[in-house]
Image 1: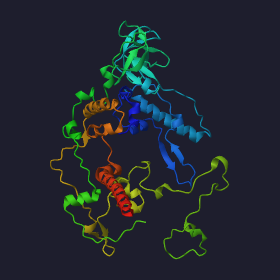
Image 2: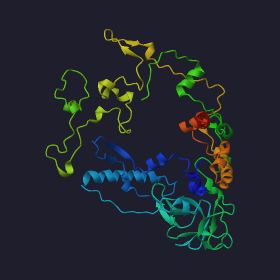
Image 3: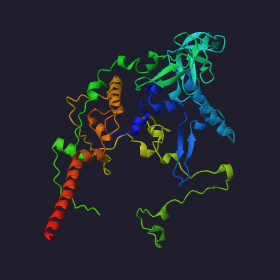
Image 4: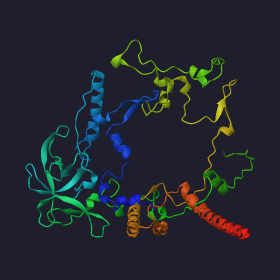
Length: 271
Length: 191
């Protein structure tokens, strides 16, 4: 039994929640465009020369929500601008943009949470969070903290929600008992089995809303609709059918297929 | 060391002697110093169809634009050879790949796993954790290896423990007992 795994016991399950949970990490990293385009290796021990699509130093985390279709286009535009400057200028000016993302263990906002906006024209109003962007510590509240923008293509004026930053206290959770703004923290429950979110001013638990469990694949794991021919049901997946056997994969196949190896092997030695 | 050999073979034989290799690139070419250092001479067409998807796969549509060596690129290994006298293609049955695939009749596993398993796994983890919480003894926890979640990794050590460990323990015990018995026997003989 490994006791090292128990050091993280109990697990902070809330830290894994996210809309993009089931999308492969490599794909998300590729969308950021901070990927090597060409690697000149084999330089006799010298570090390889890498031509980046967008150098990781230059990657600027955006406060854009996931549903914003422009986010990938903007990253690609930035990538093109980078290459343009590399060709036309001798030096690339590094920008200093340190965004200290709040670690996921301390993050307390989830989609579906009732919050109060603390800044702007909607100051003091309550709303529901619908998008959370962990990279830049921002949160989008439905219908609040908006800005009137003109869309040229559709020729429409539209109220577009602006990000509210958690680390700057622009938005706060609402205490369930009296509706006042509060700060939350994570503590172990009485059974010592799970972490719960409590408001610091009243000590009451703020339960995690169901919208937080939502991903690109399902609303909740229990209500996930299985694809008939492609999804293995859980009872079959979790069946233990392995019987340990002392033989190589090739030997196992030979036994099963009835292949007999009657070649005479040369003697081997151990020194 | 190969570099100390005075005579390096010049016959038409492929040799791994470093003397035949290209020398390390010059760090400077045509007096280009400073910001204009360039790397070794390397032509991308030496590496085809291209690394890191930079050029994409060669499409038959562009075959006549490609180097002639690639005109018959079919993305698969050839199953024969071209007879030099005729120019005809001769199929060699041994070159045709034979896939040995087990019969999947009654095989229940499908290509993907349903997300509902996460719920089941959570239950099993919490069950195991509540049990293990009160245990400090490693031996006590070993009793629950069947219910352990996540299950133990199948490593060589696991197989060794499963097949050989008990036998070896027994042999060591017997040998130590045997040694004790022998000492007693010798001691008694001396008397």
